[in-house]
Amino acid sequence: MHRVETDRPDKTTAPARGRQAALAAHGSGLVKVTLGHYQSKPVNRWNCGRVWTSYEEKETEVSVAVSLVADAARAASDPALIVSADSDLCPAIRTARCVNPRRGMIAAFPPRRSSFEIRSLTRGVHDRGRGLG
Image (cartoon, rainbow, N blue to C red):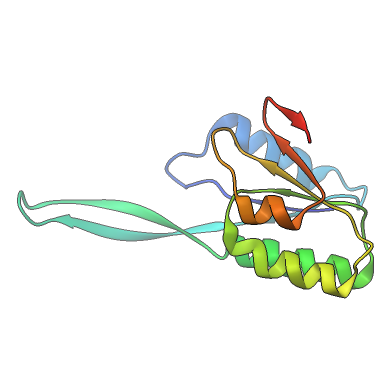
């Protein structure tokens, strides 16, 4: 299993850090944790002159997509659980399906988010609070 975690450096909570540490320390080889990262960038508010630091998520979708296709090629897991509503993952889902047509893929959407395209590409869908459908 491959898991990509991202937490903004200014918003990382103690539970998130604990979850990341527990997954990384698990050591069974069943879970590989890849920590995503954020890049800081200054934001200027021209009308009042205010400047602050914002953060932009980098490479998370790419890491998930590469892992999805690589796991399909190795037949490394069954089924793939895709926890995202980001349709940028659709090309990777289609490629993984071509590489390994028998591999199951289930989408689990975060609360109040969904993707029609991901729903159409996966065989099972879990909408948080609604169950598997």
